[in-house]
Length: 171
Image (tube, rainbow, N blue to C red):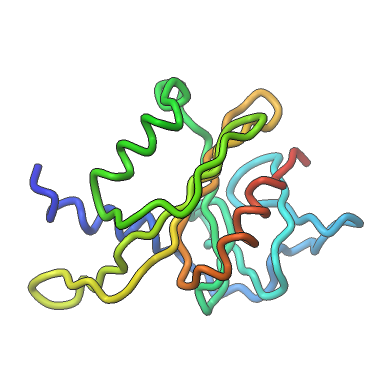
């Protein structure tokens, strides 16, 4: 399949659906500042003020309107659990990749951050218009493995979103 045909799919991974809701969670944060992650059962996260759910029935996670914070959370399939950090890095480098920022093995997975081209899909041909600061944090929470991932507009926000992903916990 030509790479150009995959561009809309990749764009969909980086653009969260928004329900227009106002608060980061209907019930609000618990005593430790955690809120339930929408559209996934049993996981909670610490998110910044102003973070909104990715949308009713949409991808599990949160985002901000200014694209300074956001993540999507999904359970990793049994097939994908067999992939090593090196395998995932190799796959990442195959499409819309610029350079690695950080790679770190953790007790229950890994943290990968990299620059990817920010693409504009308006018009006849996609055009590169800057950089997206992308991340993937693999975690084991309870008996399940999760991938917390996404891309944000500014490098300064990477540490905050990665720390949120590393801090996910069972509710």
